[in-house]
Structure formats: C-alpha cells, structure tokens
Length: 401
Image 1 (cartoon, rainbow, N blue to C red):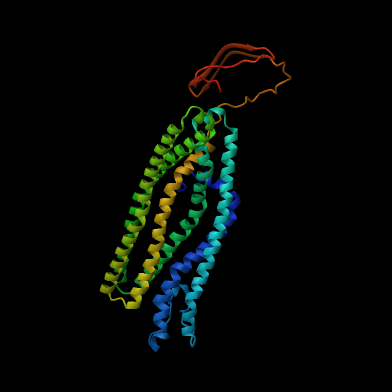
Image 2 (image 1 turned 180 degrees about the horizontal axis):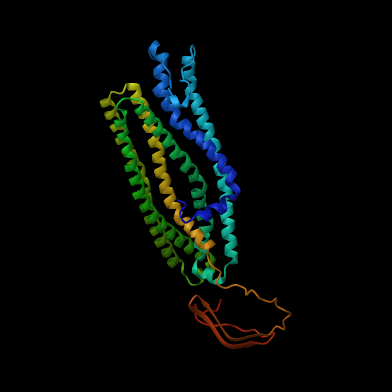
C-alpha cells in the first residue's frame, strides 16, 4: 500500500501521529480480546464449569516449564460467577477499545483531509496558466474534494484495520497452533491453515481488477464533472446559441459511461466477500473432518472452530480493505500529480519590480507556447498610452492568452 507513496503519507501524518499511535494501541487491545477471549470462553471456561468435579480442578492453562508461570485455575466457589462475568467483561473491553480506536482515527482523518486539501489548493495557486489548460476545472474540483476523501480512507481509516485485522488473525492462528500442538497428532489439524494462502490469492487477483476499474471510473467521473462545470460557467453562451440539446446529450453520454464503469467496479468489489466466505467454510469443514479423525473432544473442536471463525472474519475484512485500497490508490496518484507538478512558467530569479510606467506598451518578437505548441506570436506591436486595441481572431487562436 505504501509503495511509491511513503513521503506523501509521512508529510500529511505529522500532525496526527500521536492520535494514530494511541488508536493503534487500543486497536491491539481490541484484537487481543477478539481473537483470544471468546475461543477461551467456549473451549476452556464453559467445559470446565459445567463438567464433572474432576474437570473443575483441572487447570485452565498450563504454560511451558521454561516460562516458570504457575497454571491458571478457576476461582474456587465462584466458578459460575466467573464464567457468567467473563463474556460481558470481554465484550466491554472489546467495545470500549474499538470505540476509542475508531474515534481517534476519525479525528486524525479529518486533520489529514484538511492538510491534503490545503496543500493541493496552495499548489494550484502557484501553477502557471498552462497548467489549467492541461487539467480541466471539473477534474481539479474532483481532485480537491473527492480524491482528498479517498486519501483519508487510505491514510487513516484503513490504517487501523491494517494493524488490527492481521493481528487478530495472527493471535487466532497462534491459539489454534497452541491447542493443536498440545494434543497428540494435533499437528495434522494445522493442514486446515493451508486455506489461508488460497484466500490471499483470491484477494490479490480481484484486487488488481478492482484497481483497473477504479482508475477508469475516476476518469469517467472527472469527465462528467468537467462537462457540468463548463455548462454552468457558460450558461449565457449555451442559451444564446441554443446548445441546450447538445449539452444534454453530452451529459447523458458521460453519465452512461460513468454508470457502466461503476457497475463493473461494484461487480468485482462485491464478489470478493462471498468468495472469502466460501474459502472459510472449506477451512472449517476440513477442520471438523481432521479433528474428528484425530480424536478431539467436542469442546476442543468447538474451541478450534470458534478460533477459525474469528480468524476468517478479519481475513474477510482484509479482503475488503484490499478492495478499498485499490479503489483509493488512483485518487492518491491523481493528487500527487498535482502536488508534484512542475511550474513551467515562473518569475526569473533576478526579476525586478515594475517602476512607474508611462502607459505605453510595446512587444518585439514575442511568442508564447504551452509545451511545444506555440499559441501566440507577435512580431512587433506598439500601443500608445490612452489608445484602445482589440484582438480579433477565430476561436482557439490565442486571444485569451
């Protein structure tokens, strides 16, 4: 995600780094409570509480000897209270950490959007007139308003999930591995984790298609904006020459093209979630089959399936994140195009302030060009003070220039 855009990220995150770091810390709490809390309740606490008296005195967790940690047991006489209070406590911690994390991220996101928009607008003020001939007004408006929001999506909103969701997957997988290796022959159960690379392949394949469609969608949207802005700015000309019907046709064609590109983008974006869910179902089905063959108990199978489900839920979210990133990256590239644009016509380093003038204007051998295209040539022209001169010529001859 950061490839080729690292400097862009760092420059606009300066004022939001503290908010981002605190948000990620609470995101760590959220990921830990999600990945470990519920599977531990289902696989360890409830079977022990509702099991035989012999099961109640068994440790909930046994750590390796090299750690030197004592085993964890249920509090004697308070087993039911502990089990009943464990679930709401986990969800309270999970909910509070999620709220604080997302709130701080959105606050940082607003600051980033403001910073990006201000930087783009300042850059536009520095640009020469030829720049506005290359990029239409509607396109620039699209970049300042809509593309800046896309940067917020990439920089902030998704950054939280890029930290929290993979961490949730990692902790869930560690929990599964820990349970499997504590059971004779349990390493066969780890075969079920091979479904994860399949999901990654699906996400990458569809992600490439989404990025291509997103680029075309932005192009069609910019064209629609340009047509709209031109029409509104030329309202008198359109009515003076009776061009209303032509303008309606231009808008309808651009709108239809935008709709067609949006439909393709939505098709790929919405296909991702069902494919990931189907892959997750294959992994869980394989887990049940392998677990039954090895001889896992019901509560052990239930705990592992819960951990698998919690692991695949963030994998699904990561897939959606990938789609959102691929949609937003073209917008990021369009903003960078403006911010990195070179000022081709600038004041000379030794430019002198204009002294008091007489009002006489004289040109000798002057020309003006946009790139390689010469749009104005004046051999010799002298305009005395007080004289009015009109420039006449066909459309596109360079009169405005």
